[in-house]
Image (spheres, rainbow, N blue to C red):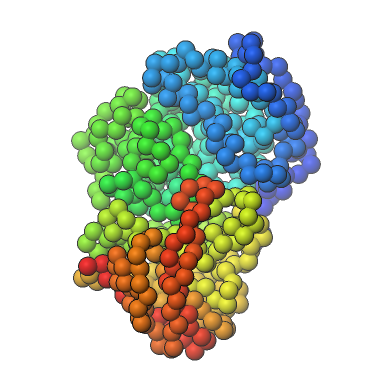
Length: 525
């Protein structure tokens, strides 16, 4: 509670409290679907379900796939293909299957906000305005429990504020639009740092941040909404540059660091969840007045965003809150550092992701799922074993309280070429990354009361052979230590898509308590 801070704790208590639930129940009483949205015959059998105020996302089967499928991502694509006449029938069928404020699809305010943004975007692309009745229903759900969203200190308050802004613009409610604009300004100022890093140390959710705010910004300019604060635009420009550093220029792939569930929004270019280039191009044109390097993006053309003269520069070495980047020729190394400003999603401090061109040579394990059938997935994919870092005595860097919450966050600090952390037991890990003529050198220093430490390098799935001092394959890794070293090539898991897991090779280097230093040479040529 101390590390979360009084604001987040108070908002969480308010948002989950009896009074908030009672108010939410009153605000979200059963309502009739507006006449224009009544289907003659529902496409899906109605599922009245629990009232939204009583819904619990983690009770039962994993809710995320259902929510993703009900964000109305189809609607902008219908508008782009000239099939916008099908949107009223789509909405009628959806509302027939999901009566207002009942069932799992009404359980989350952010999900309602994302639907509102997709509907408004589709209408604007078709040259019109969205159905006012649908937008009013969605706005009521978004506004029902703002404390819950604000307590999360992640993408939720961003999405809900953007949704409220656009709902106000679409329904002619200026007061609602101003309230949404203010909340968006406040959320961006709090959650996006001056260097562009986001409260969620996740490239995937950083992309979702940019997608949501870009659509909201385009709609507010198009419909003459209240302008964004200068600080908001400045932070979003920095956030665009931040993600541009991490994206592969050839494929748009992002490191799977932090929560990675395949979320992508307003995908007008058909890029899919694994290619962030269209998201970056749109954000760069709106917030930086520049191209991200992909001037022929069809989504930007559909939105009428002109191609700027300037292009965002490719990054060399860089550092931000939570991350550090180093280059060696075509190779990029990305180190997950501190500080832990907000609630961490994974125990991944000092994880190193390494890319050679478009190949992710040393890789993060991904997420698996938030509520998986296999209960072992959460501790595995969120823990040290799924990251290129050092673990002590089979424990993670911090104890887990639940699928989205850790206790006893480690102390962290910066080093000129890396960072360090110290856990509650006094165990320490410091890592620095240096470019070499043929790759990188990684220096790890460890200390404190431990019996065994294990360094893991999670490798690109390929043919690797264990050697007496490391592994050989698409690259050569040589590991040395100042104490006896035990090397093994074992099989681990990685999640390339939500709900899926695949095997990959992992080099483990184990040392006993007398060890204080390990060095890894990564030779790429």
